[in-house]
Amino acid sequence: MIASVLKLNRSDFRQLKITDPYSIHRTVYSLFPQDEGGRDFLFVDKGGDFNERHILILSKRPPQIPAYGTIESKNIPGSFLGLDYYGFEVRLNPTKRDKKDAKIVPITGRENLIEWFCAKSETWGFKTERESLQIQSTGVQTFNKQNDQLGKTAVTQNAATFTGKLKIIDRALFIKSFEQGIGRGKSFGFGLLQIVPLQIKGEI
Image 1 (cartoon, helix red, strand yellow):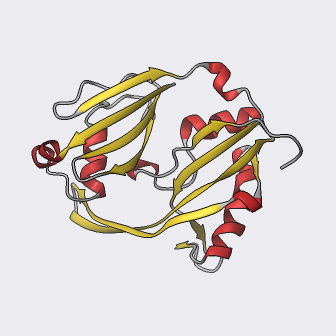
Image 2 (cartoon, helix red, strand yellow):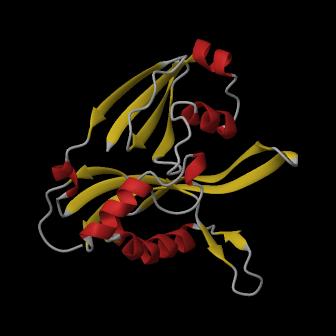
């Protein structure tokens, strides 16, 4: 896997006509020409300051050199995913399927989000230290998505950033979650599991 950081300044934003999450999506996708195997990359907008914005990208193949902005890439060694404990941050689209009508509905409220994440984390190959779990940047992201048949359609996505500590309970499943992302909305900047190795004694 390859980790990259796309850096865009104010001039780049004007040239790329970046105004909303969909234009960020369009910019990142332009770095990876369509492949028969489908999307093989993830990204998250890390924000920045008045002068520059950073977009973190995880991919199986190298990104193309951007027409605007700069990109820095490095290979992730296989041993990086072989440890037991990590600190993490991940921006997710917290949702569930309603049992009555099968509609996808957003999950809101701090306690509901904590319960949802702790329950889902084991399906992603890890166990979360509940006491360490923090929720930030809750809300929604909205944009108009171009549809070839319907024209532009309005999209609203529930959003929350989770940070904390985790313990691996299923290595193969964890690696899959890291490489393929977790949750819904991965095409629009959700699901990239950002991790930092930890040395922890005791159990999570």
